[in-house]
Image: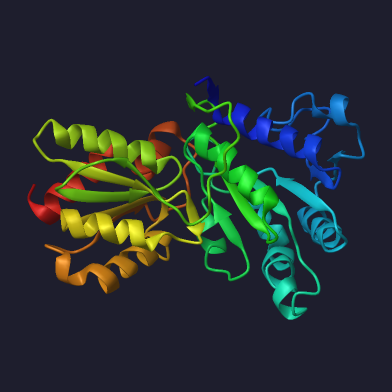
Length: 325
């Protein structure tokens, strides 16, 4: 199978959608002549023209609101909000309109819209540009939330998102764009609500998503050197959430740690931990652990920023402390 980066996978998915359906169009900040803040849409304006690749002013509420209206009118917009931090300015349009329109109209209106946005820290972009809000959106009925960690998943989940009749938050981690992996030439889709076991193990389960999957895999390698076999589950989507795969893994390992980049307080890891406690309590040999970002705004200083984000060492320390492994 050929290799491509996550950046290339997302770009391919967008080109496919534009080529296949004239109702699909892109709208966002700097996606046209600039080629996208992360170069995902480089060359799109020249190929598809300004009607289908629309540069817009810095007005996130207007961007998302226009996308909702276009979707209700029969179009299939893919709206790019430069970072998930900026979606706060469009929270009303996302939560009170995109997510609820189909329900409140008894199915008379649908909002088949994808909101592509960049999440996560690690790039020295400061406290207001380095946050992880995908877990917030996963708490809203009517939204779907995709969190790909590999090129294969990025392309497969994007295909699913564009074909879906509901609005999807498609969260791309800023530091994963260059990650490469095998992607089949044959068309495929990755369904929402189906987690993937990235590594088999029998001693402890680590649940993660986005960049924390890589952190979990490195922690698993470190523990393997000590004779501990770790199973790593990549959630791939937060809503719908595949609790069954997580629970099945925990029933095998009897231990679970959830790792996410967001703050522990109010984080999505608590939702996963609660589900494990409710559905696999009799199989647990200890408490469900959580590893999250430190309870501070993200520092700009490189060393402090690195200290605020979960590392493989912190995951290993948590597992050893909780379970004595």
